[in-house]
Image (cartoon, rainbow, N blue to C red; front, side, top):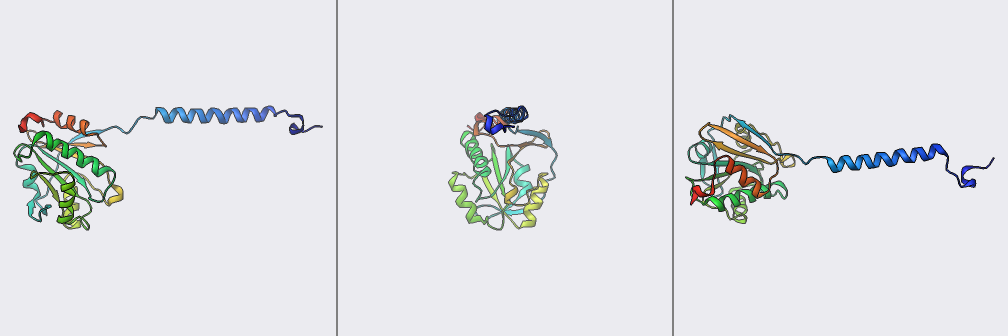
Amino acid sequence: MASPCMTGRVPHGTLLSWFRIGALVLLAANLSAEEPKESIRRSVETCAVPDLALLNQDGKKVRLKQLVEFGDPVVVNFFYTSCTTICPVLSTGFANLQLKIGDNPRKLRLVSITIDPGKDTPQVMKDYAQRFRAKANWDFLTGSRAEVERAMHGFNTFIPNTSSMVPINLIYLRKEKKWLRIFGVMSSSEFLEECRKAGIEPSAGR
């Protein structure tokens, strides 16, 4: 009896197997193409911001609670200076917001808290701030590891290390005395729109 190889014919079962494999590959490709991108998640939260004394990029002690809860619009994020992925996007959003609003702290206060206090000294943060042309109403904060963790917990956040970095922006809703938490990577235009919806208007700083 001649083998399939000798006759040039492919067994019917083999054809079915190849057909099934091809169908699975096409199905996987279609599912991958249709898979939605990670959406931006929003929540309004009550945060117990601790009354901590942290150091800013100028080496000055600032009271975190006073900085973020007494004044006009406040936006907070977390970062670390050696980050090359999420943090530059977050910082660019802050830089563009500052450009739109201006540098009057009565109109806008930006606060970036490092999650890598062991490396992010005031001078290192100052160099980072200069890269994004940060003005006087943008504070970069550091402290001991314990202090930074207390600050994170105060904003209902915990980022244990740099490899666990996630994109978070928090906007203080002064009338409600609550925080709008926005989780997700946004373009600068998307971030500006989120701030506008939260009541931070470019015209407010001019």
